[in-house]
Length: 557
Image (cartoon, rainbow, N blue to C red; front, side, top):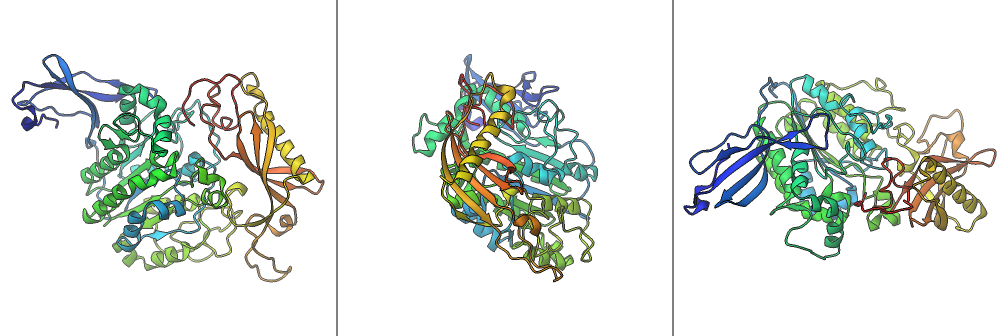
């Protein structure tokens, strides 16, 4: 119900109307505004959808205009949560474990000391950006072919397993232009959950078109303590956008308090561009955790407070510690007390696993266990330990390798290295060839993208395994963390280089073959911002490489 606060009108005759925000058919990027429904001090109105634009008029002039939100409970059967557990995922983009320690001290203290969270030290990303890391724990497959022309509705998202079993579902993600399933992609044809926050953010952008275009510019200025105008780019009116998203989450939990739930809220804007902005959320994240505990929302819900990867483009990214942080996102689990008491082996295994090598693929298996109420202990050996995810409720092998865990070379943090001269002939030849490879990638867009030229090799390292092998015939010890022993004898190089004219900084890991050729292991990664450099193409995979011959105004990517 929506009404006018009589005490604020001061006797003035103010009329208001609202228009429901409606998703346009066959589009996840467009909205429509419904028929105007008028109300005043003496007559309230019933909101028919989760979102509405409200306009108030006095003496023929608009004196108020704002998007409003609430949770309108769906008219369908939802299962009680008495016999099963719910899942609450609260994600923050581009937040490494160390960044969380630096920027969210209040939140982490409450997580660990009051909620008894298991904070994982070895949780490792499986891809460069958000898409593969979210796909890994939402579908179990981070390497699925990406098609920008099709919707994601047919993907086997794990929330469908919860929905099939009577759970209420919610999916919220801010920053609509860069959100995981919409950046150079079509998103969803149908709402991915019973409640979906994206139309609200599209509504904000529709009334503030200028802000949606230059938001990243304003954020860059704010990061350098330069404020333009009276409102932060991180706010909608007087409300920080992350607070709005948290409040929507709270309303969902209150509306479905006695029902089973799968709720996922993913915050991009506060972490994606500048890691220093994370501190702005500390008090609000803390308050949300207090709400969860004191409101009883964790009695039958498993909370995952997490991220997808560390910062990819902030200044710290191009430091030695920043390159490690990028691979190790923050990840934690909070279990209900009743679950730990009923299944003590889960508590024991989680305590063990916080210091084991884990990944989003393991989280996927864990979510499947929760969806299917599979909590009983598994005999050792019943779950494959190689080339597979393992439920975090089971013990992760101590000698697990990145290869076993399906963690790609570029994401694996389990190695050491030694610096070698950048003018080494082998390094120079490899780097020149890698630049040629990038130019080959761009051939389909040669009319739009400039040819890249090697400018400088910033760093070169020879990669070593941390661990030694036992002699043949002895019991298996800890394998080296990247490859099997026979491949460990090959030379692998990690190289950071810069190209012209884009001034793009790239990272690549290569391996010398027995024929003295080299292969690129995994992807060539862009390690600095590229802004509007690739505005002329819409290929999601090639945007980090392209430097448009004719630059056009597009916001930071």
